[in-house]
Length: 304
Image (cartoon, rainbow, N blue to C red; front, side, top):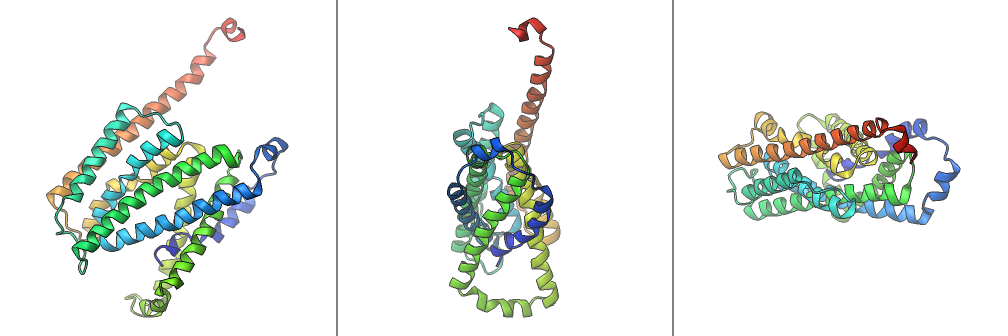
């Protein structure tokens, strides 16, 4: 259910899609890939989204919120490497610093003791949760890089409607896969009891699922939109913005344990994330200066 709720509310995106969709011009239509190719892209990415959501759900089930969020920060490491090979992203010294620091931060958590394990979770399940979250972070970075590649090489549309199409159709596939998993695993049989035992009541249970699902779609459109407008790397940086403060919020709200190792890991994650942001700031400054330099060039030079 935790996996399903992350994509199940995709029908709400048809509302903005009806207003954003614009007529396709001739050049755009001639450059776009065939229906079969586009369908394969949506199906593959959608199936990967379902698997990624499942791995994240397993990780959150067996880990504390603070540990989970710190491990999720490793998606920046995977994003840097994958963006370099798949999207031609530059690998600068600042990005390298961020990758190294985040790697060390994750290594600290890996060797940390199990004092922060949720009640009822064995050490073996803790290891499964750790590996599942790490795998989910790698797959998430791969998904963003593949989306950027799809926008550039396959979809080739300049309107923002392509962002909604990507989210709607991949979420449709992911929802179908999640529903199959829900029934194949037999978990659907426990939903009635889970709803009945929900402390705030059945209505609150349903409303929690509904609004969580809607919030996931809003978040996903923002993530995919940043991939379309900027890059998969930048989208990953923004999507992990909250990871630096989640451990603190987990301590305050969920009363997670924050030992010395986790504090050091969190500070290292913040440092790695900060260098990532600074690299994007430097790249943005260079991009802004480049057009002005061209405009200031002598007329003779431009005519040559």
